[in-house]
Amino acid sequence: MTAIIHGDGAIRRQSLYGSSIENTYGGVLSFMRRNYTRELEGVDVAVSGVPLDLAVTYRSGARLGPAAVRAASVQLAELYPYPWGFNPFDTLAVTDYGDCWFDAHNPLSIKPAIVEHARTILRSNAKMLTFGGDHFVTYPLLIAHAEKYGKPLSLIHFDAHCDTWADDSPDSLNHGTMFYKAVKEGLIDPKTSVQVGIRTWNEDFLGINILDAAWVHEHGPAAARQRILDIVGERPTYLTFDIDCLDPAFAPGTGTPVAGGLSSAQALSIVRGFEAVNLIGADVVEVAPAYDQSEITAIAAAHIACDLLCLWRQRKMAGK
Figure 1 (spheres, rainbow, N blue to C red):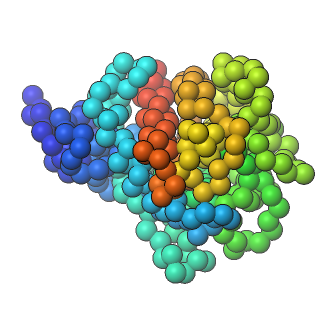
Figure 2 (cartoon, one colour):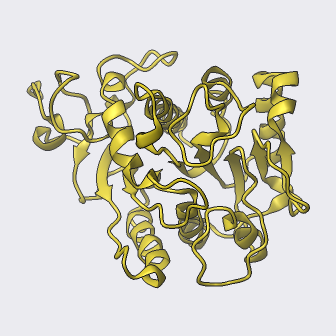
């Protein structure tokens, strides 16, 4: 019989499975109190952060995003997640791998450092759930995932911005051009990829399917979810969620807020219906806590991340 851990389960729990009893207002702040470890044997999902915001085009601060999302996850570790009604960690081995280290004062070394961080985790066959940091981090993560799972991948991309503005510089750090590069380099297939919540203009969306915010508001989450499932099918799919997909009323703590976005309820409803998606990796990015109010942005990000773990739990239980 495994002893029940009271407090600081992130550093005291021996098993990868199960949960500890914690005071929500204290203790080591790993994501949802998972074990803090770099051991990857037997791990289903490794959570990690990439605290980068050198690629932003407006407000900085997303480097503090991983810490904010971890802190906001404490209540989610206290009760069974809603509406799932189970403890995902009874059957899904999830650890907090900590943060990717890179030399912020040597910009040309940053992309290779993130790629190698991802390769290390993916070599173990663990899935990655990553917290940004600004959205640039998705580009090197896609490079590593395409190496692992084969390219091109399908992409589900929640965002206010398409991030497909032209950029042919191999060394640029720009959080608005990652998916231009991903398409041009064959990392993702635009025909089987979809961007949700878009409400900024680009002359060329590179053939990616667009469900803009107005479409989601008009047709509703159920229709959006079905359209996404139809687009990606059963192909290996990477999901990236830029928190500015949400309207600033629900996510003020971000670097490039745009009015007219999705509500937290709309976004969660869509994501929770992705059990059929062959999800090979995911990230939640662009939380900038300095602009947040009462942690509502970080709380929304933590809920999205928790639901992604529940989706992986469901797929594991189904043998997928």
